[in-house]
Amino acid sequence: MELYDVMRTTGATRQFTDDPLPDEVLERILDHARFAPSGGNRQGTRIVVVRDRDTRESLADLSVTGARRYIAQKRNGENPWNPLHPMGVTADDLAAVQVPRATQLLDAAVVLVVCVDLGVVAAFDQGLDRIGVVSGASVYPFVWNILLAARNEGYGGVLTTMMVAEEPKVKALLGIPDDFAVAAVLPLGKPVRQLTKLTRKPVSEIATRERFDGPAF
Image (cartoon, rainbow, N blue to C red; front, side, top):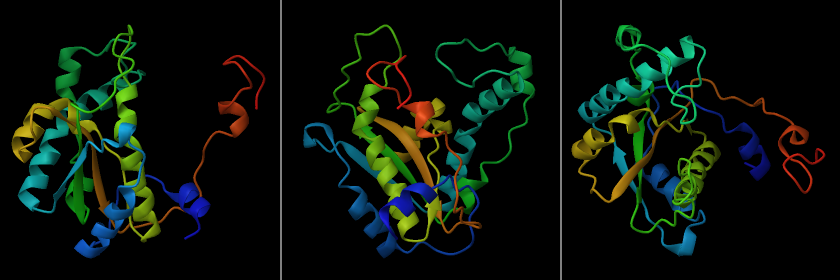
């Protein structure tokens, strides 16, 4: 596919057919994705390729904690898991939420658990009085390259982070070392329906000249 077509049609795929994603195709996806930028070329990303059904069942179970709070806060008119605004949902309301099964983790051809070595990231914002985001630059370009490459191969996926709320249990399940963080979980497979048009804000709403409050670009 042409590059811009791939960029404009790589949406979030959560429903998959029964078509397999062969190892040779997945290896090709990862082979191209690994050329994402990496600070200092330290390349601290690692991928756990999960096909085993029982392991994926366990990962689906571990996503319940994050999903329960997400659903409860959405119902309460809040931005879920937002670090600036405390949760206004009561413990009883939270416990009462019925969480649907994370079927995308079970129906996908494969699930990738993407980790980053915290020993090589450069968190330039670690001294600021806010939640850190800069260290994500060490891993998320690679994650997005995986999704772009998958789209180019006729497959799809979605970047999920629900189970990071249970990261210690995820790490124990998959044998991930203490100095690595779980950055993303990507179910990949053949989409039931391939989107060809995505809706996004126009450039004039997201870019300004010279200052944040400057005129629209």
